[in-house]
Amino acid sequence: MDTPQELLAIARVLAVETAALIRDGRSGARVERSKSSDIDIVTQMDLAAESHLRSRLSQLRPHDAILGEEGEDTPGTSGVTWVLDPIDGTVNYLYGLPHYAVSVAAVTGDPTPRSWTVQAGAVADGSGTLWSACRGGGAWRGDEPLRRLDSPRLSSTLLATGFQYVAERRRRQGQIVAAMLEQVRDIRRLGAAAVDLCLVAAGELDAYYEHGLHPWDFAAGALIAQEAGLRVAGIDGGPADERLTIAAPPDLWPPLRDALVDAGARDTWDAPDA
Image (cartoon, rainbow, N blue to C red; front, side, top):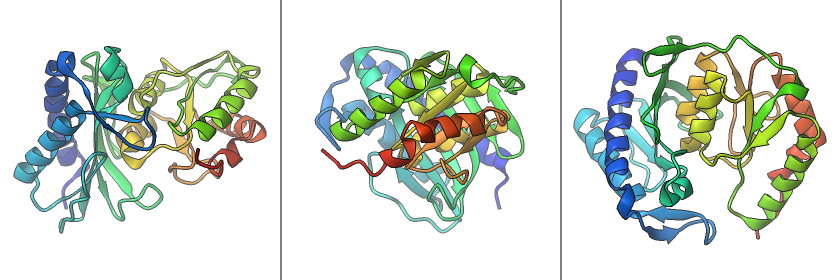
């Protein structure tokens, strides 16, 4: 079995290579199609980036499985699955904003968030920063180790979140934000879950929550946050998944979760599509 450190080395290479590819192609980015709604877009560079990642993995790890945002699942025989987000924060990328990233994670076990074990992850963001972690081995921003030791009060928390692309769910998420604004220092909506989780790991945001994330959105970022000392979990305290992801220092996590429940976060996943 490959060690987390060996998988991390590959994740870092893939993330850095693909980040250079999308950075070079950014000026010509165009919308190729949409997904869950007209505003949930895919550019030709999302497709090119995932194609590059899959091609490189076929060379480096031909027996591994692949779970990617823009392509069909690829089965494997090794027990390792690569969870890929070729561009997290596509809207930011299209508009020329730097808050986007390539996210690459290696997981073992059933490749679903409530069952998998993330062994290694790397996030290469639009500023040129490489964030990474391996299970049991710590987290880094470039070569700098990350460790969160502070735990602010809820009232002093700079809280990040994000919104889905389906209208009714966005409306419900806006109601939760309105309720939370009264209880925290302020709220940021930056538009890329993988980068948000890394910024929480670095202490540049205090905490983060979001409904409706897909596995590729948070696989690598969640490991980076956890290895930096944060608690990353779902609203029930179990593994984070598509229903809700909450990342915060351990002492802050329970009051933040309780405030989110009071604001209606438990019910948002069941809001009807529109």
